[in-house]
Image (cartoon, rainbow, N blue to C red; front, side, top):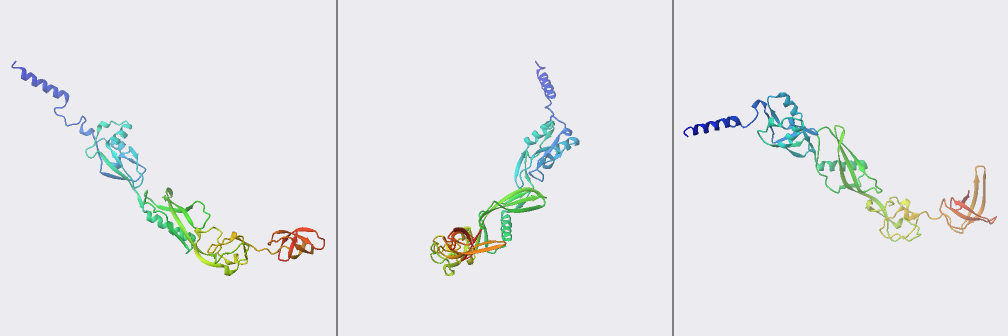
Length: 329
């Protein structure tokens, strides 16, 4: 029994040596076989995808392996101005997919890192101002007052030579009113981003309104008109800015006081009234005949009306040319 302690100690020593734990340094691989991956707190990426060598510091003695893993694509880069977190497990997963023994890698420092896409920041205010300037220059009209319906947000673009093109989006029947403008940004000649800017255009013009009620079939005189300055976006498209388009015309309906007079609410007065005496003219390049006649209906210039030949008593249709002449085709 006195030999038992010696035998027990010998067995423990043999077990420790065989298991490799008695003098272990904490790794199953020799130091020269290890690849150390140091992850910084953050990195900035310029391209659309990022590689391990761009986001970490690699140390080891296997230079061929170091070169290989440094070129290993870890993932897609975030959008310009955005961030994402790269973890130890993601890196090992990408290396494992390359059939690399991941047991050789250690992470002495942090086990994750934040990466950000290098970007050029363009403020929303700058975008708004170039659009407003574009509107003023394109219209060259002091009476045009554009305003923004909403503030544009800041954007982030990839680094490079920036250019942009501004276009009006959509078709509009009115001169003013709501407008959408698209700003297309390009980097080094390649389109990368479109930003929409919503605006409202106030366009002021001097238009004519009725001073008092203008009755239906009334011949309009200058005293019936009043010139005022209005935002024409609030008016129908046919508003009138030239009084000569109204004076001497007749109203097709009652026009209320202060109502903007539209071109389609007036018409030319008839040159010929029913019962007017006139000359009926038949004309060719080689012959001109005329006869006295009487109109059987009223008509404006260019309209066809029935007229009676007073000599033959025959009724024909003729085109009104002036107050006392109609032409038979």
